[in-house]
Image (tube, rainbow, N blue to C red):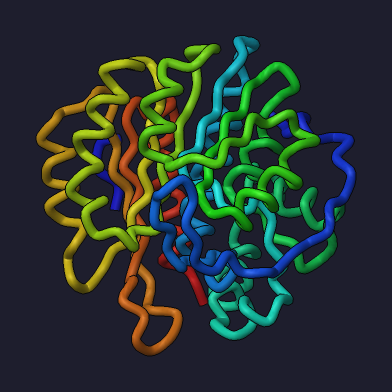
Length: 293
């Protein structure tokens, strides 16, 4: 469902960090409670395919102009995952995700090019998180700012992204987003990708996005959300759509749950200031998902 809404050069000389599959666990940092979500169990699933393919396409378009970009991400994770790790094999989500979908992308698609470069650098089982997808689609003059609160995830993120020149902060993503907008350069994209373990996030996000947009009215804001049988995402989307943001686009893809008891039956993206061509690319993704074997 679509509702209206260059070649990667930056990391040409990245040294290969050690792939880690160690989960984040549960911690506290600076008095803020941290939750147990561990993306290693879900890396490379169909929601990742949806999010990363459209992210790569948007950044590929934006880098066609010579003006520098800012890329910001509020819940960055570790940036690089090992799909042969026990956690990934346990859920089978990568096999049901990128394992089924990759062959449906044309070889010259920006997402397919990123996957090939990541495997060439880090091994056949490596899968990029969105920070690394972005870094491999950006240029040396572009700026990357990333946040993650979990100590172990942040340590892995910092190690993975240091060769890219990324500014990594161990911070709560929502205050991070407000504190770093408008960025310099002002032209750019922000990905907001929480785990939604805190159910209050659904209610908080429309006001947060409105505040970010009021501070950075030229910025692209990309919100990922899960499509749930419970319908927890619906009031949030109704509120976002009522705000009538400029060049807003909502795109959703549906797929069966990866395993019994998994409540997510699809993936959604709500985009403010969607780059030119995003709606057409989203339509192609809809066709691709409908062709999944």
